[in-house]
Length: 302
Image 1 (cartoon, helix red, strand yellow):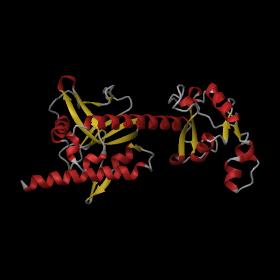
Image 2: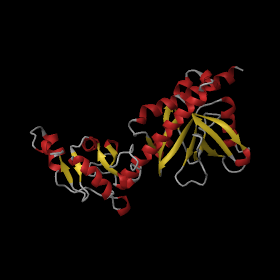
Image 3: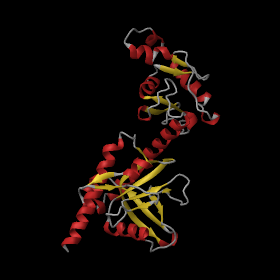
Image 4: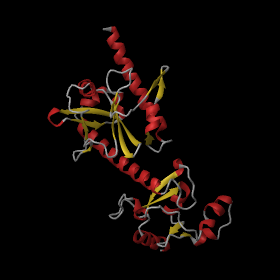
């Protein structure tokens, strides 16, 4: 009995360490982790622990039960977040007794938290944790999972509390928004070959996907042609109407800012951008929508 208790304790300690590692590195990767980083993992008690592998359901050697589930872009399984704000996740193959399927079934029985890696572009994943398996449909070869608030890791009673469905629905809605935003950013940055469209800065961690038509508006769709890859300085300047982009892809700087006298950042970072042409995606279908630019440029001039 003592050995069993220790294995359970070590399992949970490792999972908490994995969650902590993801949280500590989330900002550095803008919430989207490259597969190589997940596969490399982290050190735990002198052992290297991977968080993902080429298999969608992944269990490190030191654990009895999987630590993560992963979906891929264009994968062979109909995985995703359904209309009920739940994660649908396919069995490994068709064998109900495959060890990976048995592992997820056991995770459901024991209420063991997992990590869900959702592909936002090829090889790049948004991470969500803790995630719990809450349903098993052998007839459909499908599991159902939900994300929950990390506070349940400190108070297991919250998992089955009366408020759990409401809390989980809110968490899942937040997850969907975050995944959609991350996917938009990754697609836009990829289209611009990881360059700021104004200054050509190439450091991905310093780049944002700026909406032309804000996403809160009806036409503010999360498609690449409604986005601009911008460094954080130029994104802020665009949002605060210091920078404007005309429909012919020319950069404009607000008149009063052009007349200011300040340090080198103002001069080289903004004033010298006036009249420059945008760095554009190679693909015509990814280039900024001219009508959307015109609407935004009219607001800049108003």
